[in-house]
Length: 75
Image 1 (cartoon, helix red, strand yellow):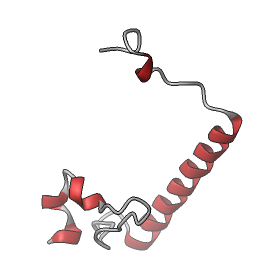
Image 2: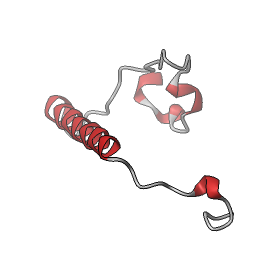
Image 3: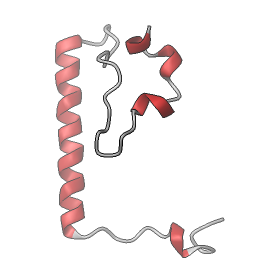
Image 4: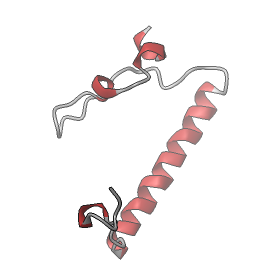
């Protein structure tokens, strides 16, 4: 199935507000990565704080993570 066959797969052009939000999210994520690299360096496995629940949806990200077996937070 492709977007040509299903209108549900069509990605709409984001609004200015959505683009501002996305830009803020990417910049915040990049800043967090810089903090981790500064604090832990390249040789330390991170993040190691374990599962951070999403209380807004009552789910744990680790419940559907494919990397859980090798995650340093679960060793």
